[in-house]
Image 1 (spheres, rainbow, N blue to C red):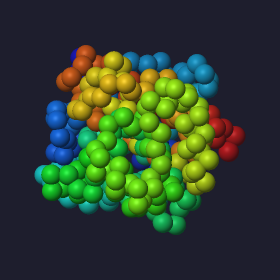
Image 2 (cartoon, rainbow, N blue to C red; image 1 turned 90 degrees about the horizontal axis):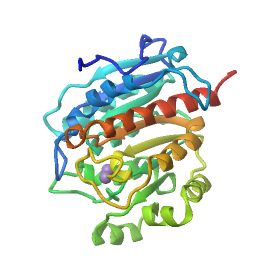
Image 3 (cartoon, rainbow, N blue to C red; image 1 turned 90 degrees about the vertical axis):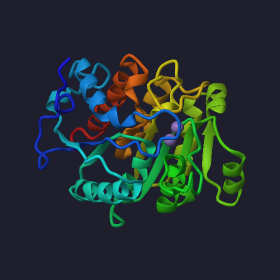
Image 4 (tube, rainbow, N blue to C red; image 1 turned 30 degrees about the vertical axis):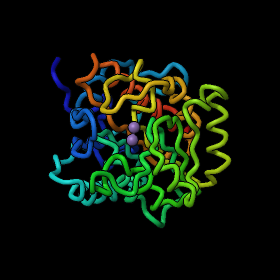
Length: 291
Ligand code: MN
Ligand code: MN
């Protein structure tokens, strides 16, 4: 299959684009199986799988102004990635556009959030992940993907981030959080009580005008999304994550989809990631129709 250069239906210029796709082929902080650097292009390629028309919202993606900025450079260090990605993201937010960031490992999320302007409407974060990602530092790297929820919390505050789908955590992270109080709903609670209850809990907490969704694809069960670096059983279903996106999309400030490592499956994980990105776009557009 020939590799398309853009995300499907991303035909708009940067100036005209309401949504901006950004690929970050960076996976230098992965701790188990590397390969998420190949995520952005694989998600783009598989995005061509779908009809442009969305059955549920009647939105046609070919009528939506989407720009694909392409990939960032392949950074040598996490510090370089953080600095440069923040600079790439700033003009997107400043122009009032909604970024869709395709990773890359989860280290790419904090700079995407940190670039959100202080002067913009208040920002909350829904962080979907099998892992807590709450270490102060990991293997000497505070910008590791194992530290990303903590770095985001330091930006938005403990009341403005909720983690959904967690089922893997160290004792140290649990102890650290006792003094910090980040909210989370485990995958086991979601299996027991349903995803709607988890989203209700998140919305009760996030009083912010806008919501940024950070999706570590390993939040979803490896039965559906095995193409990832640190797969963890007993995960969310694709439909759970679709529900979160559908509910939050009207307030969407940005979305990232991280940790897709395409060489560990036959393409299903990239198809799912592309479909969820498209879901966020059509739901946002449907909610803002008639602006
Ligand atoms: Mn993560
Ligand atoms: Mn994870």
